[in-house]
Length: 91
Image (cartoon, rainbow, N blue to C red; front, top):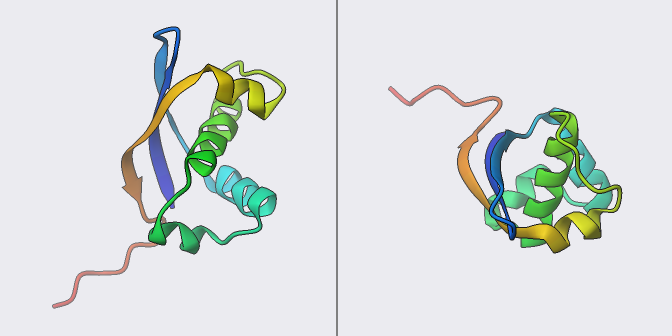
């Protein structure tokens, strides 16, 4: 699973980041959930965490504390979602 996230801050700054396997595993470890559970809905905290971890992975400077990152956010939106292992179309 790979997500493209649009990350907007209250100061008007904005960028897009893509998650990777590391960010998804970090989410699973921190929140004790499975990535497959996200198909039933995703909490804003989970989206913020994915944006935070993906930002770090893409060498975007973020605050050390996750809560300080959240305080600066205005919105996190999923722009695109790709399944890492899509199944072939039925014929």
